[in-house]
Length: 277
Image (cartoon, rainbow, N blue to C red; front, side, top):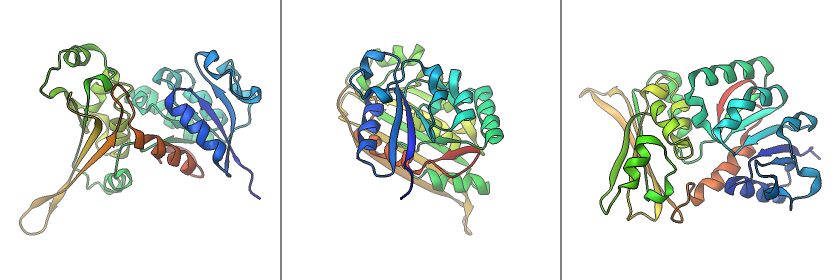
């Protein structure tokens, strides 16, 4: 019988709780530790999995550490995690920081532990990555449409969101790199897209946020542009629309939870480097 893959969960919000519950049902996974910024939130969990001080993660023998907390966790602990285990980053908007991405990539290659990025709501990520590998990916745009209450945004984007009336409003349209610091909890899908489309990156992948009070779901539209094909020179294009039911005020749609867990199950055996899963 194979030994179970041991998971360390950093963050016990909605996704962290979902992952914990799903791992309990799994025959191949087990939770070694759970840490949360507010310790009271995990006091009901079995004593042996509670981790009160995140600096003590090194005392636990885990195969992979899952971050579902905040980008500041990766900023502070990302390199340390990669010295100890594989690392799955649930807040990839942190990687819009070029220096942080470079340091994490370097550390991952040095230690041989993989840095895994869950596809989440980014449909068709592997196909985009293949095109990027071939150099045939010429353009990528990700549009996210949600009820205004589902956005946790900052700065000028927050100001626009507060003023949304009955008509849909474009909160932002432009490079994903500039958007990530303004919507770190909302645009992980776009960050994932920028990592998959590595020949374009955070500066050339375009992001668009739309607030619409009529919506009871999260909509993600992905537009891919490739090279001219055939005799008429028309560009290769693909457009997908993902509709994910969601309660008002919730940042993450229902289907993304299951996608996240499946990504965790696939996050192994790739070696050093950044891997979409």
